[in-house]
Amino acid sequence: MLGRVFCLHALWVLASCHDVAREDRSSGSDNAPPCPVDAADDEFSALQQTARRTDASVGAGALGRVTVGKTGTFELDGQEVVLLGGNYVVKAKPYFPPMDVVRSDAKAMAEGARAMAYSPSASASGSPRKVLPVVRLGALFEAAMPERTEIDEDWATKLEDVVAAFAAEGVYVFLDIHQDAFSTTNGGEGLPWWMAAHMQATATGGESYIVSPKHPMKLFVTEATTLMLQEMGVPVPSVQIVTDENGANHEDPWRAFSVGSKDGNPRLMNLGNPSVRLNNNDHAWGQGTLLFTMQVQNFAYRFYRSYLHASDRTHLFDPYVTFVLHLCRVWERHPNVVAVELFNEPPAGGLPNLFGKAVNTRHDLFGFYGEVLRVLGDVTPAVRAPIAIEDVFGTLQDANPTLTSVLIESVPAAAASQLRKWASQGQLVLSFHFYPGFATTVDLPSMVKLAKTEAAKLGDGVPIWLSEYFEGSAQDLADKLASATELGCNAATFWQYANINYTHAQGWFKYDPEIVAKGGLFDSLTNKINAAAWPAYAQTVRDGTFWGGQITGGGGAQMDVLQLVPSLSTLSSRTTLKAAAAAAAAPQFGYFRKPRVPGR
Image (tube, rainbow, N blue to C red):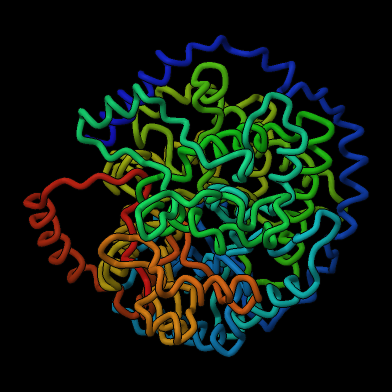
């Protein structure tokens, strides 16, 4: 309820402060000319040569292909199956664990699936349903295409090796084009830094797409909004800046690793800039800080519309589709790959211009999806991989009725046609997340019902996949895998799996012993950077010896979850106890997900 109240009042204030007339949608944005479709296709046809094209018969082992059934189920050899597992997302270099760790994890997941007490309820036809282990494997665009011209061969080889290692143990894979807050240039991860650099270099109105001395990190939240939220008792994000021992702000907090500063590689700003780290660590991520910045809002609005304008299509849209196509070819070579997911948790874009831009986010996002599908549909040889998509924020229509009432623009007709076409071919999956708070104000049973409704609107026979949710213990994660299945999910993956025996931390990040000995990177009580440990860590970023990143909600990981998935009888009794405890607990508020427990 509190999240709903926040959304209503905050957006009302934004509307009153920024009553901007709706722009002409046909004229585009950023003063860029519309991009002719034929010219765009010619440009893409040249760039796509960098994507690997291999016959589908080249694959690992004899693992059967999971397909999308006509009734919106996942099937193996004509029998309905359920896919259960966890996210497997390394948010920074090296982007994948060492192969011996991957093989160990794959073996543990397969053994866990065999050991679980859970047997799903029978299918609609009365047939038993088998559980297959699965991972949602992070495939980050920033790693795959560090330069705009081609896919990085080393990364591509590692990806295929990881997928094959999972296949060897019978573990299936969703390929997840993961991002959070878009790019390292504003504290997030996922999209390459050169995309934001292009946007900034071609900005026409002084807008900020990157964080730098000339473009300091800034929230779109107005002073009036802040005052109202404070009066309501709702947490208000704020930009944090590193201070000296006297409490004074750093004199140049946004220079290190920023685009054009010549003070570090811009690819590493999300790791190496200390002020950025204050705003992208797990606690700040739970407060929604980055997503409320002008940089993310501007990036989102322009990226979703990049296919409409010639320059942006060349520099943003075409490289992105090249990457998607590459992953679709990986699907062909590896029968254990189930689908390619286009985009993780797409943020709203265009705020604080509520009526001129932000209300169109869903229209723009699905227009983007539709054009991606149209281009993929024209590729030779034909793309046969299923594509998974998420709605705005990774949530669903009516998961927060107030948010739905603001994002009023419908899916463009051309995009809706593409979605129906791909659904009819058994090539569309609806992915959604469940993080109660700002974007989701309903319970899980209601969320699953909404997913089924939205999937039916997309087309016939679209499976629903709970691709992220978070709980504080392995047992609670396991319980929700079973609950989601019984409620009607065809697949479910918890956030997140990490081999904590390897990292000695609560996620896919490792610190040198010197940093650990000095108490870790963050003070667990104040959530401030540990000044004693930071210099040693900063040096690892500078010299490239760091491993992974404790950023944008990357902590709180678990392992050995699948073997804990309970029988239906145990689940029923445990759910009753949990419901009673939840009813007695004080309500909590979170924008997108609960803050993770800080890692070491």
